[in-house]
Length: 235
Image (cartoon, rainbow, N blue to C red; front, side, top):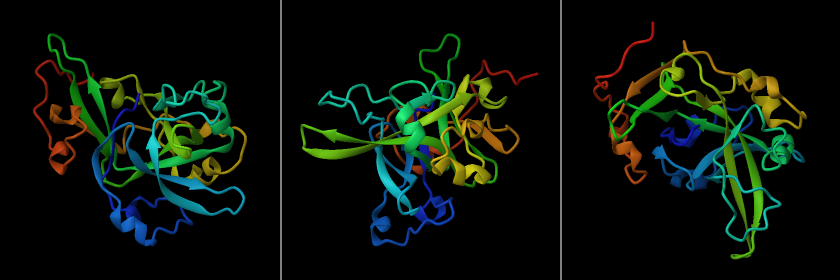
């Protein structure tokens, strides 16, 4: 799964898709996040299919299908598996009509350690430090309690590459830049874009368990921690 991400770059640097206009003054107040968690609003890239305009918008992480009748919004999944995203009722309409890109500087994953109560967290990013785009879905849902619309999203996951597989069997679907246009379009099923991104451009390192608390949200979270004693490099 993918349960935490990093959006520490300024909005201009996260505008990784051609045709985005992020000079609006509202972008000056966007909060950078070193430990972005579900239920928080994150920057997401969307395309208006009527006008072709692309935008970088704040949307809440935890998808609510537009047909949901539960006044609380129901269970709000944060991830959707690539293998079933086009079939499951929760995701299939958004997959067909409301795909988005979640620009990030990295993400976190946790590894179980023998004999330890707490899992060891790791930060995962590109070796060159550049932001990259995760495949996502977004929805508009009518909140009957507040009489207003809520925009939400989920991140699609795929089987892990060799790097991430050392600690977890799933990772977010990282889109190749050449596929951004297709992913944002109304192409019915661009499933071939949901790849397991190669390990070589990526890096991973252990970090402090401070990241377990979403209230901890500062640059020191990304400092390298000591590798757990049970760690063995893959053969």
